[in-house]
Image 1 (cartoon, rainbow, N blue to C red):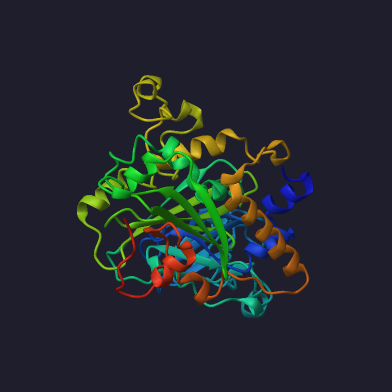
Image 2: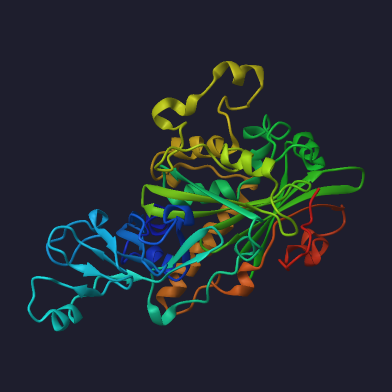
Length: 426
């Protein structure tokens, strides 16, 4: 179990909190690029790390992310007019550029000097791949731009979705590094989901219900190895990298695209699951893209606000008959919603003082320990890891190894992301 004070330390990410300070040392996904599709399009509300912000794309194509509320009387700039390289508050016409700087206050005679004294809080925002990323921390500590392989491959090789998850970010992350549930919760989907089926690894998953876990330190986080029996004298290993604070990658299956997630706190009781599929050596096929858009694999079918159509208000459209017949183990359709339904069922912030963890929870235990150490170290002035290019050029691995070989030796260079190199999969 986890003591209450440690649970609070790890789950609270608002301004001024220790974990919030850690998150603010990383570039985070804040929007899909499709949400700001063209210059001067309507602005978008953004809530991240308990901060209420507004994002817009100006006439020159630059992205802005700033305080949602006008400095004058506090009206929401979501109602603003996006025009001529700025966002103008419709209440009294105050206008701001993408840096949050006031550039026009029509009521003031000394407009230029007055504008110079008015600046909203703002954060640098860039487009990489199909995602908009923002850095919410100290400008003097800003790390290099993200170099995750999914967002450095050529156009057409990555697809990203997002969905609202109505629980704290940490319990969502912990689901992402928990490989032991796959055989049970997702067992009915491994052979039917178009983004998973046809893999020899599925047979190993279903054939061994008692995986052994080995967790080793990785410079940017952890490598979590789940071992299952394969052929005689061999083991099937699925190696999941976790990179601080909130990146996980699902081990691949056959030639299917590689999946992964960023679990981004909205506030302490909600988060965004940014889920990606990419292939390091080829374009995604139209069949794969259609499946992703339809909510297959790690994705979900959502409404216009990116809330899953199957959600807690309708019991995730649970089908007890399908559960009884074994069509789906949980009665809920879709791998993403099978995960989020149970993580949300724990409540907005799970009470970890009541847990009884077991050996298969080794990755979760180590991740909590490493997060806590990173938070405490940051308070002592030690820079975090996970925000450097060398930490981010990592892959998940699925492979069969001799029983006497340690997985960290067996995977060798397979976990290192390199342009054009095929991923190691079974």
